[in-house]
Length: 394
Image (cartoon, rainbow, N blue to C red; front, side):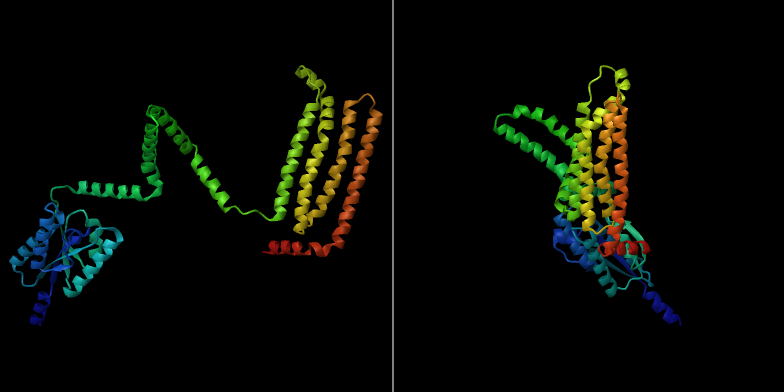
């Protein structure tokens, strides 16, 4: 039993692992990893230091070897030590981490360590430590910082990251690189034509226009408009007809209102405007009623065409409304005559009453006609009514 426990204690393996995450061993010295053993690591560290004496990874490898020698000299019988170096890629990111994991798994298959003493140059701790700890416990971390501080190296790495983003990302390169490039090109063109003295005048104009575009979002609006033009697809024909009739009708109504205002006799002060308000309204109605009625009928006619093509039952009501609005011209004219000539109210009143009575009869007749047509053309509107019922049920 004692012999068995002694054998288990001898089997405790500790790996002193040096990590070169940025791949300097391969990039600068052409050395392939993983490196296992004191001799291989020492030769690689010397070669890397000869290529770049200020390389921190070489110093980290020397520290790993020194730590290996010290632990070996302590001579603990229940522990076996090995020193090794793995490296990532000079491109960094996911590719470097995947390469580190592959080499670490290869190491652990040949030397199944129970724990790891990690030696790094300090900068890569946050990225490397989780990768190692997920596969084997880390009992100690040794950071080697030579001739520079961790904060400076992190700042340099962050600066390099943002510089790379500025160069590669169009959102930033247009501002950081595009604007200075355009200004330099402008200066060069003006210098060719001996107009460089206008550069200081053109500079604030250029920046002013740029700030206005950015401040008021003109660039985004133009981009959205271009995207809309690019992706625009015309609506169905019936909707196009309805929209066109709406535009034409609105134009007729606007012109009619203008003609009505033009026909109003000018009054010198507000008191006369108020005292002559019925007269003013009479002239306004006479001047504007024709085009306003035409405009409203055009809008309703466009909708009627749309609902006919869609087999919508609102078509019948719309047609009846067009007839009533068309007859309302007579009622409005009779009203305007009564407002303009109040001295002879009997004639104007008779005309107005007659127009209203005829309008009521037309309305009743229109309702009856709608009822008859709806019953006789029920099959025509059946499809759309079934769809409406399905939507209500869902």
